[in-house]
Length: 314
Image (cartoon, rainbow, N blue to C red; front, side, top):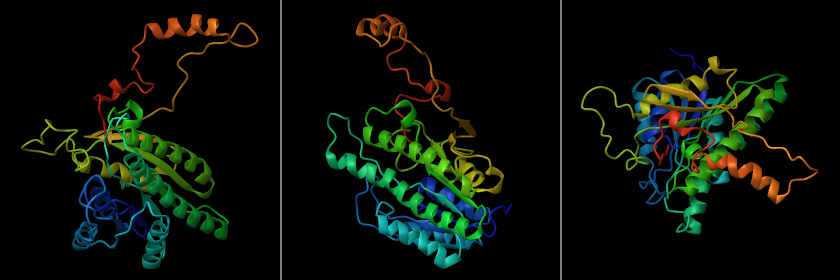
């Protein structure tokens, strides 16, 4: 199936894990792929940058008969993100799909986290997503205005179940992933008139970023690992394709043969004052009984429905 023939895609953080699987899937569907990866060996964003991870994925795509080119820059750098978009345009003459995947981890409890541990994770995940969305959105808006009609544009952002259920040792990561949801829904509303869709996925997969999360859940000796990144890649291919034209501003959890579409937060209960304004006493009478019978750690997203553990990362 070559539903993406003639399309050009950028995949960030595509040298390993989820990004690699997504780049290979888009190429299998016919897209020309710009494979971005800064190439640092540490999942915490440390170590010397290397061209090898991105180059290896490009070689895989080309060996399978596809088209790909590498970019080794840092998407959290505003100018390098601009350069990445320009490479796609200069190399292939068009840009149709963006998959934001690049990220790092620097885990720490909130009472122990350093300023750098906070800033670095927010920078790579949230600013990196913003930088890329900003430049592809500007390109598509310009094309739409020039043509007087809609363009083909698909953005798939990578969030995490950590934003839904919390993750005690990852306040930086959970905050960044929650921010990505806000970026996704805002961008979806802003870009829909140009024909562009913007969605987010919350993947669960065994990668170098999640190796300790799934410790004790070894891959099966036979068959496909239910935590393999290859379970996530087809959904990215679908969201990047023409069949997903009406899918916009959505958040989807995906892993091991399951896709769950999350609802927007809904009102669980409402309380109205019987006077002109609330008093402390009235709020105490209304809210204290309501919360008294509830789990104090219950989240709005009912994580048990998704089969989540107390600590989740994507």
